[in-house]
Length: 258
Length: 268
Image 1: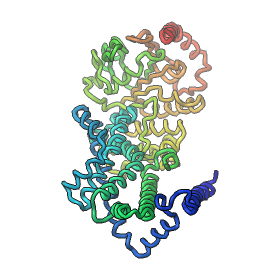
Image 2: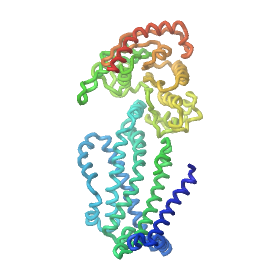
Image 3: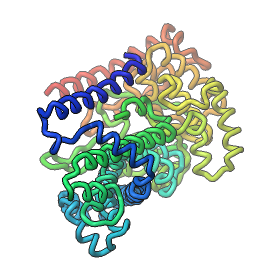
Image 4: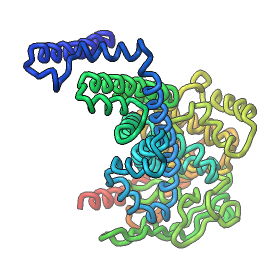
């Protein structure tokens, strides 16, 4: 199928779902009180952007997300490389990593709120704990699967330990980082919004919490819609970066356009 | 054979430690092999006879369990820095272009980028890839990737060249072209070559000497044949000459039993 046709169909599906939602709620098959009204939701989103009321909230949420994403990815990359290359460190930390990873980390949000206060620091910390493990595991496994032939060849060409890290392990790990970044962007958002939801004075999560407090279901949906759109934009930014940095990979772009 | 060759393997045995239920596995046992200066030696043997193990020992990528390796009379410790290695499987760094792959070794040695680039451009020309320097490995054909690998290794001017069935993945025509090209490059400065293959015809058409290994495990050297066919050779045409056919018959007689042994082992 041609790319243009596909995009038209994707937009068509989106509009169709909205129309279905509208019809079901307008006819009260689904009660408006619980399921909202799509037209009101869209009006709410429009009002937010026209009045400018959303910008400070959206700004805070995006800053939290992007900071959590960047710091979490960098830490995941460094620790992934370190543990993959140091057998002792890997064996020493293995049970701790497994434990931390299987722990439901969202539960840390209230603790971070106590430690770091109710401003953005606690949300960024929560996002980092979510992003870190995704990147960490993909780098860790990726580095251990670097082709032994490529490694042996680089050594025969005279690469020392530092050069192997810089010219073989790092580029190889980058490919694995990117494979996990799409999932990480989503997790960074989860960290930010859940953090805001549990205690904050600003952010889209805060807006949603306020609206829920007065059973304003339309505003809740409007918040969700804005967040989803932002997540799509960030995901696209990752795809663009991937396209630039992984030009060497055969078919890397099309196969990862999830 | 000179006792003080370029590359000497003395009573080399390689045993891989036991893993789980498997007992330790001895790949090669008690192998003596000398490669003289400027000599092209091929090691042939049935699949799984430890040919590659022997090559890795010569490269210093693998330390022998017992025995020793000397390079220009000196004991080999760690990587053999006098040797270049052409691998059987893909060894190019996929994140570097052809040109960047060729410059890699110079870069590792701290040679200035501009100088390395000029030198590498020249080598790409010598392997006939001037127009493809900007391409990534996945954009090149299998034969082109082998040429890049050849340039990548030869640019460092190693005195010893170790080759592990480098052309086995290529189609027959490309393979014959690459073999001829290898001989031409080799004739320019006559490096010492240790060439591992399971293809007897390839071994005879390229080499000065062919060494035959027994079937694994614990492979030994079981025969050694001087190939006194005239050079320069055309690898496609030389296979039709009477001299070639005669020596082929001779070596095949030695090899046949081992191939059969290896085959029945693989079935059991």
